[in-house]
Length: 252
Image (tube, rainbow, N blue to C red; front, side, top):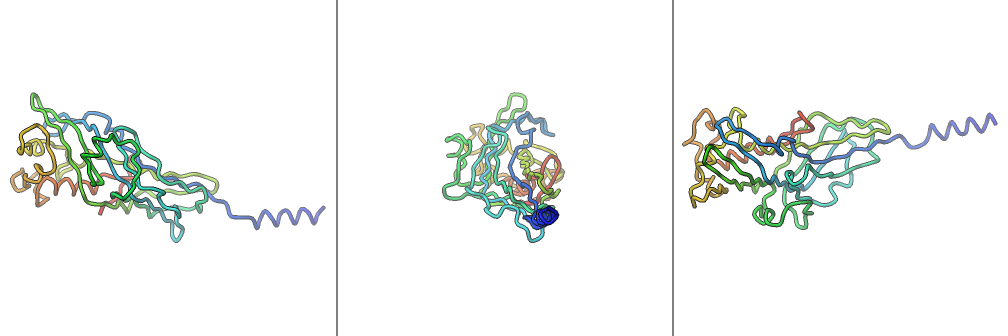
């Protein structure tokens, strides 16, 4: 009996090391489902915030959090739904995963999670696209704006720690309202409203926003960005993703 107990102890000690579960998802800032009031007096609502997710990764030292990667690229509307699960690994090595990244980009055969067909058509091949309405007294605008650039958000903080037999989730939070921030981080829409020029139909699109040069706008608001409003849009886009409620990522 003593020999049997020693053998059982040996087997347990030499068994496979414990693992945990590491998961990832993309979710919206809850504020995207509410109404914004900008610094310059516009009332703004997002009706669609669409992102095309092409990849997600996590590493802790030499350990890879998601060996299989993203099974299929996804296109998701974060106003129609609150978010989407991405990848889960139930055999993750217990440790801190401090090198994580989310990639946006269009891919052949990407999965449409919940984007209405007409919105997907207007989005085209852009990996980031927003639609919404804005009003100021009796003036109304609709915006349909996007970026054609693929973006990778990395350097994300804080890290996620997987405990033995525990779980941890990387929650990539999207704060799409930041694309309308000025240089001081204040939300503004007046310059975008002025872009409704060709044609004058209350709808603001990329080609119109490209005609509004930052050199013609108040320097205190847009003086740190040379170019046009789409230049501003794409610069702000690099800062719209963080981890959880208050975490950060850097887009490039």
